[in-house]
Length: 484
Length: 95
Image (cartoon, rainbow over the protein chains, first blue to last red):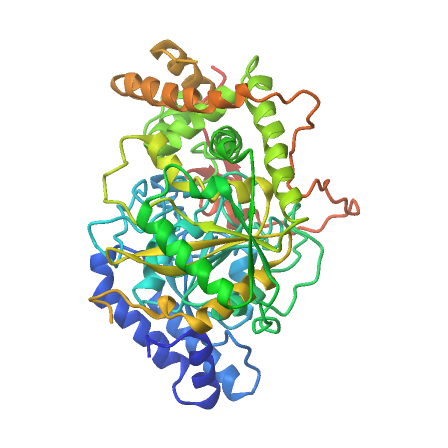
């Protein structure tokens, strides 16, 4: 059962081949048997899941089921879930059962999807390896001595290891796409504003966006359809109809113009990864696409601009954690300042503290213009590069990450080297563009991800581009040894 | 720009973030490396470039000035470290 795609499972549920209760129990059994090796889950909600599964079965019998009704999924522990611990991978929220549901939580529940648990992640989504989690690192199912990527590492590992067919993630600088690439699955970051941020614990509000992890573009089309949509509770949610992403999956790619930024194929790109990407591009050429060399001249400024904008917004967002209203509180504070300082000092881990400090510095009196304003100006230059490129091409392709999964601990002591693992993904966040990673081969038995960036609100096109490739390749069907 | 231990302590105070004194040198080293890295931005001429605050250049949506939320205080305070009579408790502020 666990080998099947979401689309196949939905058909089985409709046809009565299996029930959601059976399917959910099968996922819970896989988690119980295998997650000890991966550490992908922070919380498993077995009882609530089985109850939701029985409700989904009733709905299916009543003929009121949608494509997600009865499908088990894992939820990144950044999405608020009423009454269920929502830790954000942090000691700060280890004692926090969210008092309300995120909009994405509500929408997936309304679609009948069955949450089986909350997944491990870098603390407050700050990291590219899942090593900053208070709950310990997640292992990559392709090689348990390596990282799954981050920050949504638990969600990516859970889908790659076939513990669940679907999971959710969030992407501020690559946190869906980079782990999708390193774990060999499909991950999509939608256009900024497409998926509601309400109840999604904020890291950098002008960059954060939620999206799905699945094993295929077809499955991602189903899940994104349920996650997306206008939400008046999110002030940056976009008022725009959600398309039927499944309707356009099969559109032919004849004449598709694929832009290849020369900056994405230069120094720093692993040769094996580069060769896998070249082979994927050749496959697209056979599918009728036209490859066009383009330039995004400000590419090298994306990571530096991000490491001003994201920490600045993080320092502001995380000021809400004060030990007073919710979350961790230090014991026996001697006064109010001591309460704030020790609650925050003891509740946050090292990487979160680094980013709060950088952000506080960049926003402090006398430095705002030199850092934050400057970075926001550079951000426009980066965005304008893309706008010019999309006058010429339909989508942009390149590698999702410069290397395959690196070893646990390899970059843990060097923040800047860790930050560079998001070198190809960060620009899409700064520009607010939708982007996707799909499996495109292996180097030394480790997965490689192909990165596809689209113009605003072109999620349907991206999924179509992914689906057509997955019709003629089988990288996305490969399963890590030990998890078959 | 390199940050020394004093600068880190000052920023940590602005952020009300407790840092163990023995960890300060490492933070100073890491933060200096990050700042040196973002220094690349200064090489770019951004004269006349309007800062981009929102990727779609959207502005805040307005809504009618009407009460839409219900009072959910008990629920929200159920996750608070310490409350009394509907109030959040903190250490004594005024002697």
